[in-house]
Amino acid sequence: MSLNQPQFRPPAEQDSVLIQMDVGCPFNGCAFCGMYKHLPHEKRAVESILKIIRQEARAQPDARRVFLADGDAFSRSVSDWDAVLEALNAAFPRLSRVNVYATGRSITGKSPADLARFKAKKLNTLYLGLESGDEETLRRMLKGETAEHMIQAAQLAQSAGLKISVMILLGLGGREQSLRHARATAAALNQMQPRLLSALRVVPVPGTPLFKWVEDGLFQLPTEYAIVQELRELVAHLALESTVFRANHSSNIIPLEGRFPQDQNRLLAELDQLLASNTLDTQSPGPLPFWL
Ligand code: SF4
Image 1 (cartoon, rainbow, N blue to C red):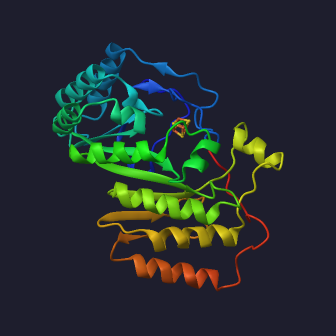
Image 2: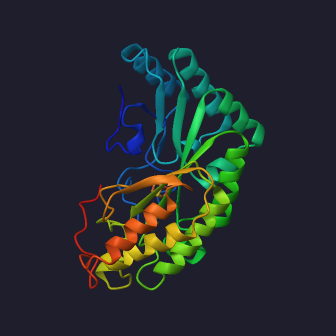
């Protein structure tokens, strides 16, 4: 196996065979993200990827799920994707799904016919970091993409039969824009209608611009109480028709999960109970977990 460290993958992919198409992230510019800050981006040659696939298939011939890393492996060209998906199907006879991190850019760089062909070759879920539906927050966080574009990308992928798993970051609007960030994010998600939604809490990572802004007093994290209020505002404004929702990452203040629309009222009740409990810090963000 040939893997460069560190390795990042969504929690749901922990049992998938991990194959690095790329090392690092081709954009690597988001102000909050420290995942690949010190790792130069490298596009692996297709021949090397095919060799890794054959090695992995010898080690795990019955594997059904594959996750293709790193940061935005979906940005590789259409011909690279055709070659890799064909090799995966040939190497893993029981293959059922291939999942990958994607961005709005990497999705809209493919045509509807390309996406439908990838789907037929077992591409299944694209993990997309929306982070916020608020354009000003995305600009401030140097996301390099607009919410509008990511909404179009999600709709394009879903029209081709692919699943979209969207990640958002609570607290990304800071103290001042907390509720606006929540409402705009809910509005974007309502247009996307993702199959899966994960709400994480932003934690400033040393070495990132966001960490420096917090140190310099240029960005204030919402208090622990305000983060829960923000999540409540988000949940209250969601109009999702069939989405699995998770806010159970170590960065979250309490673990929450459910399905929309049927669990929406239960989630709101749990958040209301927490807000009324007098246990939340109303002055500071409270304890933050060690981040990756
Ligand atoms: S959030 Fe995603 S696109 Fe942005 S720098 Fe990190 S890996 Fe790259």
